[in-house]
Image (cartoon, rainbow, N blue to C red; front, side, top):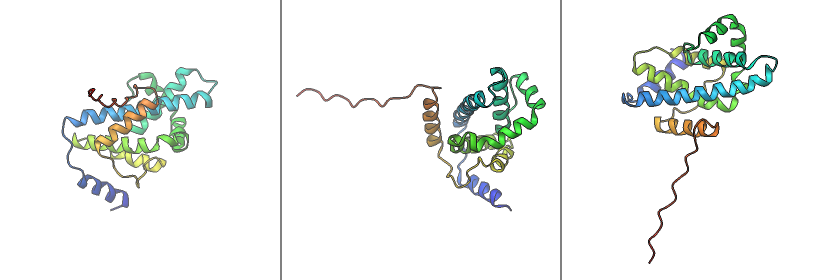
Length: 178
């Protein structure tokens, strides 16, 4: 058994099964990380592929995100683009750890959470983790966060990227006059 297989087996044994109500919430957090990655890639590609129309830059960003997370493209144009530009998508995947270095911890956590949710629903998606490991995106030394910690960190990430509004802490209650 490889070190990675042992690691994931130990992680799965430590994890209590998710409450079925928690899975949709966790999936939403994973989708939020995907949105942040898409926006980041699109901004990055606007510079690196400045001669391309924005639609083509967006399709490349979408193809990279879909490939990393093992999801089907909802837009047929993105699926066609991914097939036609397979080598370019591969190159972009190999550059993720460098081009999106600040997102790597979030990508690690999101891919792990996606795999756990998939596992709870009987879906085999370990391939995404193996690919992320190969791409240098999976930080195996990073502790698996609790669901609440993951959701909070994703919320802060989304707020930092302008996807949601930042939540301000409520002021302390006023003391009644004496």
